Image (cartoon, rainbow, N blue to C red; front, side, top):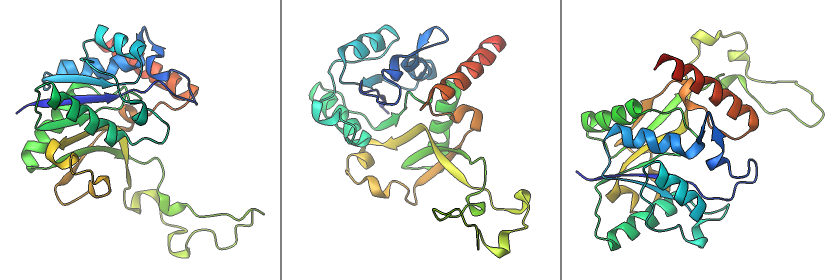
Length: 234
């Protein structure tokens, strides 16, 4: 089976400019996802989908294959990541490469490891799944949340039935953490992103510590802390 890892890393980031190549503990952010993919040994190609030659050159230094850049059309704030994935697969087909599975690895979730990638492939095989998507527990149950009007009045906030329910007695909720999306290429090429979560899609449960998605300076500080902790144990 031929597998490709695709790491989406366009250069335009308004919140944290150039965050995908921000140096974190001595490496550009994107390097952590590239190295995890390479270390797993599961991929025939580890590709970085980017519109920037600078990003492409940095990615190549850490072992990624970047024979082409992402089109300008798919490098905007509103462009779909899955469209960029499909574009990369189509361009590789033109180069003579055909893949059966694709794993999307967002560079902003850098604490995912090669072991997590291997676990995703094992789960896909065990479940005979079309897709595997990583999730983590949410910090607080959304059942304790409600809307509040502009004047701040909390009359009727929440539901009476859940007012005194303890956290341990509530159902556990999960969120997609953005670390791993493993799918059959045939499935993603259907261009139907709205039905990814079908009967053949299964969750890969990950620790919240590995699920931090970098979107602010605070997130970078947290990620740096965990990388330092991890490096001390190696």
